[in-house]
Image (tube, rainbow, N blue to C red):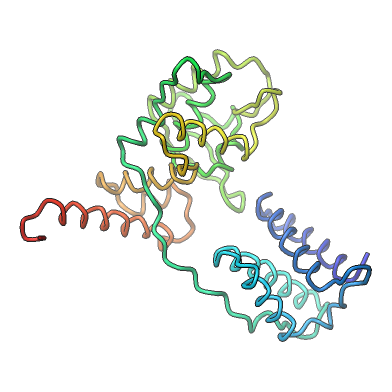
Length: 297
């Protein structure tokens, strides 16, 4: 194995010891393999760690722009590479860290698209026609209830286990980013959906959501469920699992919930991350004002 290949393996081990999520480790590994591949011509060895300088890293960054990656993707790949080089410097595998001089490209401030409460409830309370029947409608209903009713990330939802639920107090233990745990309440409809799923669930596995093979439902499988209902119930295939998380936060804020409480429910480390939902609400208010107030015209 090459020097950089061995260094990446060590870095992956460091991420595991830091208790980073599986998604983070998978993304970092893919980004660094892509980074290494760029500097490795066919049938040749990649450069040594000492050969990477600021000029080489800028060349790679320009390559990402040439491939027309989205700014968010470039930021993630750059963050993976910078974290890797910080590790190399800390472990004294390189003398200087050239990546510290690279700046992250600015992400455009894009507010999330949030469906109305009526649209979201129509999706969650879906009544499918007979020709669109699903194999596990009870599972699907519970998934939608928890994504919207608890504001869960898709990875958090599919990672739930039966033992995570306190059915008496209606609390669920959620493992979020960085494997940080939080307690989130769930409502009566989610409790009813939970009971309905347990009544037909023929498996002793601890995972809450199962696929047709009786194994834990994957992120991809759960995304497919949401897309199916979004397409065939409300006719909007652009709705995805994170849309329901956005709707959860925005609808709470619109109905008077305070920002700190929403931050806790979402599991955001910083309040500034949660504050984007205030901008969504202000945009909604402006639309109502422009449409309804006589002085707006």
